[in-house]
Amino acid sequence: MNRLALLLPLLLLPTAAFGYPNGPTHYLTDTGPFCASCHSAVKAEYAPEFPPEAAKQELPENKHYGLVRMNAQPSPYVELTNEQKEKIINDAKLIDSKSSISLFAPRRVKAGKEMTVTIKARGGNGPSIGVMLVDRALRYQSRPVSADGWMITGEPEVKGQDGKAQRTWLERRIKGLPRNLNFVLVEEQRSDPGKDVFPEGVVTYTLKAPEKPGAYTLAAAFLYGTENTDRAGFFQRPSGRILFSEEVKVQVE
Image (cartoon, rainbow, N blue to C red):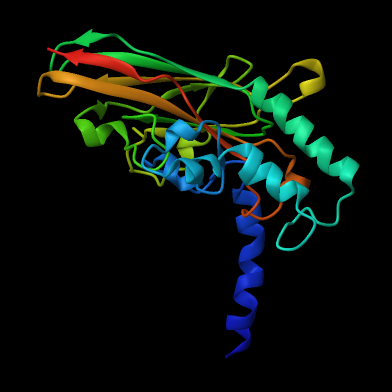
């Protein structure tokens, strides 16, 4: 084995550490919540295809806090004191209690006509939060809305906690590629839980309805972190979260 082969895993570590949990900064494309398999799920109901006990293992209490409290390898928290571990857990619980996502959409639309949907998200620890527009509130089986016949007709309008429009992340797409993505990062978000300051984002999509009439379902997925970057480390820490909005039923006529 040559020296490059030996060094390659080490060279890749900074990229992996940066990519999680502060947002999948290189996912400049349509995607789904399956991309955040290291994140803990806020509800077991997000994986109805799992056996009940397996679905419960995806919850923060088991997937995240169980690893924090583990006193042996492979836990990346093993060198922390009990007090430090409990602080991580308490801080995460506070962030979770303040995190929410809502999807607003018309309940009826004519086939092939345009409509606007808006996602409002709040929570996480920043500096980035991720938002997706998908067809169902399912962790591993939802799809981008385009898979169900919807068309995102232009780039989403993204606003951060200051209410100002953001385009920096979308502008990282290769020049000439369309920017009508179902997934966006809301960046440069401040977080100060002690002062009730949390990342916030409003993402607005313009959709062209499917040509085939029928009942369709839309949902929003929210990806956020609960630990600071210096603690978050490598991606195996399940300190991130996946949270869905309530599903919205839209009748295409």
